[in-house]
Length: 362
Image (tube, rainbow, N blue to C red):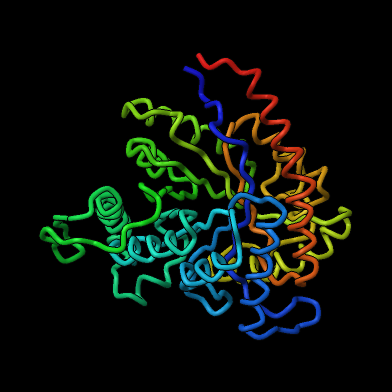
């Protein structure tokens, strides 16, 4: 069987944000948190208007981000948008209560008339574990158990369940139920093969975060995912693969670099100091923006070329771009979203649709 799947829908492009809230790296000006949230909602409105498919908010519990409660922000966005899907990216399920996660996203689904989805993951940051009283030694066990419960909650209205990390449920109803018959639940991974296999065996769509290195090195993970899907006997046509990456788009390449590099460096160097990484150099950043690099930095034509290049080996169904790795001026961000929706998305969808009409699955 072929390692890729003919898409059931047009290729999807969307945005991912953690609602970064830092001082501008050049002016050192920091807007108020209220203004930052207002700007976020404006970006979501524009994304909807220019035809992007998904708006995802990640979860963080750090000073430089305002997205500790993504579902609340997504509900606000739901009232100001019409068609764009509203997703987490990711929900740190290991340190949350699956019952409350389901209830919050079911409520979002009702507010948005069926546009909610969950990308569940273990999380690449650990602040939520001590904050909510969880032991990092149980990092993977917590996720496995809570994911099993979340899937049960999705499929059953009256739930009986017993585990090690949460009180027992004995024939209890969990409400509200979502607008959609089946609330979409994706698995978000950072490159761990075991996590990829888990998603495939469970028959859940897969979102792979690629924030460094050569993306083509992740292609074996996609192949591993589809092998696990086949092993478990799931229907490939009901599943999808998303690639989630960093990027920024401007009318010219020098402008894209001018805005993106200081913002990226500010955030990545801060995280790097915590994790023992070397400071980001301009040369390293420029290399990451090349065709075979991880970051989507450049003009619409450059972004189109890179998406299509990656599609040649991932055969993925969706790309989510985090355009605001650090503080980007709001007008520049709005322009980037406009370019993604009006220039990049139509060209990519057209070319991928053309490619897939030429593919005959075996």
